[in-house]
Length: 420
Image (tube, rainbow, N blue to C red; front, side, top):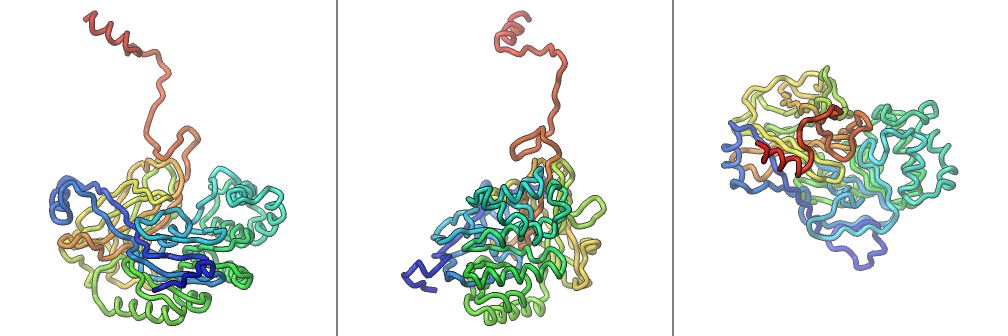
């Protein structure tokens, strides 16, 4: 798609943008040699392209919905707009003050109260304390958190996080607002309230980029839409036309019996879904798969990767899927087919201090492992277990306050050697 030369007409422009991630996986010994030999040359890290040669523009005051299957590249696109990620190639041009709601809890300090986090968010976006005082009461009323505004946000539910984040966003007077699936959280009344607030911003000339799995919401709310598939931009235009295209692709998926990833989730010790995990605790992860006939074809590989909030790759593991997997239990949804199955893993003693984790599940065919068959993502919040550790990693350690017989200086060590 060719863009006009008058760039000031556009709030956001993507010009031939690609974004690559490099994955380094750990594998069980019985599986490692087989997996590496089939999928990639020994010693070469696997790479995948979340976006490839994407070009489009969003005019000032326009609302653009971004749709596509799991793993299509939607979240990566929004992170490029907000400068959380940089493109591997191409240009991303953003013209205007941008506020982003990309994930629950992002930009909030877990130990601070809701009140303090409102002022903290304002300062991060260049607002003075006096300016924030003028909107503070409106933010709290909008978020419906009057009783909890002086509670540390680490105790907030996912719905409370969404309300607080949205309350701040709509009162920050952004020129560009970026939203990733946060309207999926909260009750129906609050979602309707958020949409009314967005309509007000839209009428005031705010440019909105909006990712949602709710096709009808995109059709009715957005002026235009962009359809991503496998990292490629396959359609961009009037929202109704693009959503029709997207629904045709989904219908093809329904008629084509193939294994796919429906979602990935974290679960607690009771097997229930959670989006919050404590540092140092066990992290349960489950990939929910569509398996026609209830069995996995031979040669399917499931990869699980953890990324930090900046896209840094923290860890990854892979395993060949057995033919028989357990039926999805607590994670099962009413619209799931009977042949829905689950693959589970547990990360012991999660060694991350706090912050946001992105979980990416990728399904590969062992014989053609460079192109993913499907991908699903989830976002988790890691709560700190205390103030005794800093940095990213929560490493097991002990303090020893007892007198030690071990020589502490180089001279003592040398003296010990010569006295032997």
